Image 1 (cartoon, rainbow over the protein chains, first blue to last red):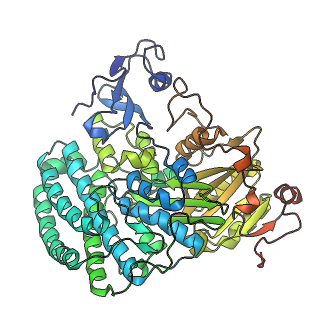
Image 2 (image 1 turned 90 degrees about the vertical axis):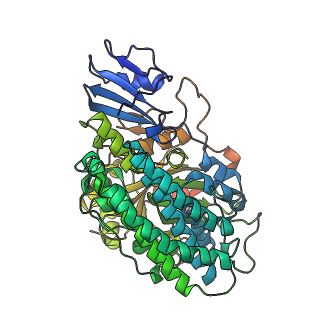
Image 3 (image 1 turned 60 degrees about the vertical axis):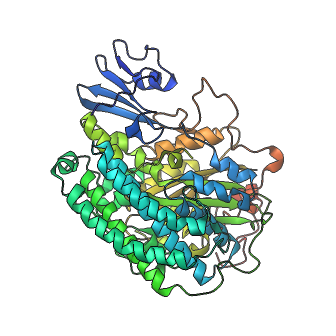
Amino acid sequence: MTGCSLGFINPLSVLENPGTTAGDFYARNFEKKAQPGRVILNLGPQHPSTHGVLRVLCELDGEYVARCEPILGYLHRMHEKMGEVKTPWQFLPNLGRVDYLHPLAWNWAFVGAAEKLAGLTVPPRAEWLRIISCELNRISSHLLWWGAFVMDLGGFTPILYAFEEREKINDILQIITGSRLTMANFRFGGVCADGDARFFKLIQEFIPYLRERLKMYQGLVTDNVILRRRLEGVGPIDVDLCQRYGATGPILRAAGLPRDLRVDYPYGYYDQVELTIPTGPVNDSFGRYLVRLAEIETSLSIVERALKVIPDGPIIMEKAPKVSWKLPAGESYMAVEGARGQINVHLVSDGGKTPYRVKLRAPGFSNLSLFAEAAKGTLLADAIAILGSLDLVIPEIDR
Amino acid sequence: MTDPDKWLTSWRSLGALSVSRHDLAKEGLTVSAFLPLAALIQAAQELKQARYSLLDISALEAKEGFVVTYHFDSLDQPARLAIRILAPKKKPLAPSLWSIFQGAEWHEREAADFFGLVFDGNPNLVPLLLPDPDEFTGPPPLRKAEADLAPVSKLGLLAQVEILDPDFGELLGLAQVSDSRGGQA
């Protein structure tokens, strides 16, 4: 696989005098530390394998990556500033736009932080609706990663299958969220819409359907010898690397640690759900692949359990906060297990109309930061495999 | 070591300015402390040895200066905690944790972008999320106007606090109060 993106500044240059080539600020900054004779490759930000708008500068020694540096910020929208100038209620739709693949986890992190701070209680039906929708959303996120990852490695067909299931999940979630991408149906003290009979019927049909399809994925992709040769032994990420960079989620679990916020700090009704945490048999790219596929099965069991126990009742607390609602003064830190790892919201309020500080901790941010070290010394094509195995969503990293 | 009390003891011996206990269910933390800038590296090293990892660096601007909160969690069991520093307005310089937790590089660059903080020892302190200095010359976007600044004592960062350094207590206006909530610290 070649990773050369034409058309951007300084796509490919052989260094004679490092630091003097006509690139932009970041290229010049990167080249300062490069050795003479090396090739600088500018990957992205418009290259398909960089999932949106990530740019990676690589110093190549032949076909090996001697050094690389991700350049961020192409999708930066300053969500944290918007959090400070809008009331909490007005800020809600932003959360669906931070990570468009798992928007409901971000909804939960912010709404949960505000609920903790203000001491709001959520009715049982709303808690279960949150779990059902958040887990279905996690499945759709993992499915899209699965398709896109295999496409990065050169297999085009699987993403078409992945989108077929994704559309079914979107059909279900559209009933209660009203949207198919930037979902924002969580409210302080509940959710905004209840599931009707069709909603529950579609989920009942979807669970056995996806289980059958997962078997097909196993034969079609997971056991495929080409995929295995591309992934096995590529990009091992051990616990030490995770610790030094703060990597969480499937990456940490593939490294062998059963850390999952749904078990460690159970929020909502996750303490009433039996949850097996898949951990990787191996910590390479293939291990991370296996962990995510196993998590789809875990999410299906959670949804199944939730459907059995969800009670009737209100979906939002009485006298739920309105648009002009003020947060009480204080601090809260809410952590939610997103599809990519720990989504944390640090909310600080001085009792004013808008929050004093909203810090959004994106899991992909820390997960990507270890890439430069993990990719060092690998083949360029393997670096692309490692990048894909990190499951990056750039809007979440750039915020 | 994941026992919160042991961390309080350790931070006291490092010369902590104040230590706080938190309600994990409400605030999402077990314990926290304000440390002097000089003790930050030592505290981070102890956390690393105890298998903690750095979750994020969350900065904010208050009346007295920049409060920089480092959130950590254990790799072995749920025991989230925070250490904080108060960087002065005039010279917002803090030591970098990069040599201990390499992931701190990006978190520090983000805080530098948004607040203009400077981290001593960060190997690549160039803009991360904001455009490069050739393009963007505005003030750090999360700095507040003087009139909008709140004092640290109003932000609930101290919870059940025990002030250990009288000068620090005086700076925050908490010299006489050992507990801002009325409980036993």
